[in-house]
Length: 382
Image 1 (tube, rainbow, N blue to C red):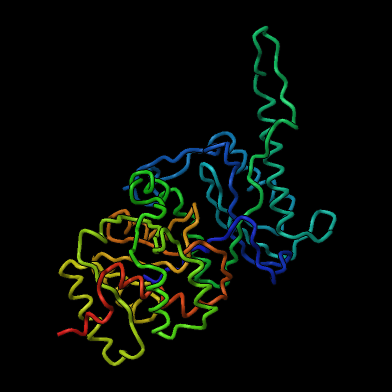
Image 2: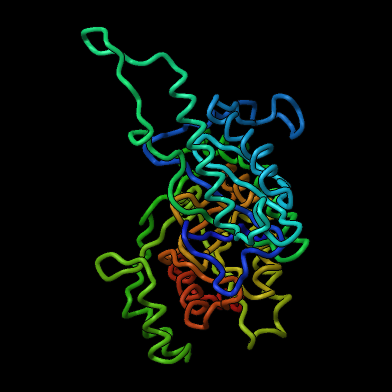
């Protein structure tokens, strides 16, 4: 079940060391202006229909959505023939574009340009076409029957400022990005049918773990310097001195069933297969396994539990953005009530190359025990 989730970026962050005039694959996300709503289309289809069928989940594009698609497939590529649209999905209020830049970017006059200029030109072109579409409509009238003119200045941009980019860096991630974009309509329909589970629930779990208790645990684990501990603790979601969690999925799995933490320590490496057997045996009896799934052993145990049809809780190492949703496989599991995603962290932009710190790892191990009200050594008991 090894999945690389699409990187969650803000709408303005960029890779500081990357030259955005260079060839490569870029996953671009554009949002329409918030007050415009679902102006690009509507979700349709049957959630149970297989991919490729005419009844599979899809988006019925509005006239504006059709214009946005035409601008993408015909106008953008005419201005920049070195840009190929690999995969795209136009959703009701945003769109995903996987663009392949085949050679160094330049305009028709041969002047070098960067990707931001290409995207800005596309957004401006769509806004201008939308304005022309509005002009072509019969003009609204006032009480005396006279027409009300529509000026270009009074017409707002179609898209929100900025854009989000993800650069696939290897063949495996490129496949993941294509699948993520392709699955957008099905994912949206899943969330519409399971609103109570498939949306972010902010602060929905009070762990009863105080910051002071966590601090004591981290010190006992020799988890880092005072500075690194303070930095990790400052990123936690808190209310009234205790750590809270945002969730995605069915929270009842944490309260209705026995929960057991899955934490693999280096000191227990020789007993790993005993730990794995105990975890899966208890999961088969109905226990819910809870883990940050960081260490190799934790990944193996949690993945086998999922493949066996057991219920799991995954602790995420970063916060959830407002538009967060997991991979298609994990979303299906959340919809079935077999997976709960939780995070105790505020969201922050984290470069791909940045490693998870020891205090962050130890914090999630402590949280797994707090949520389960059970020590992570439970499997060693007779």
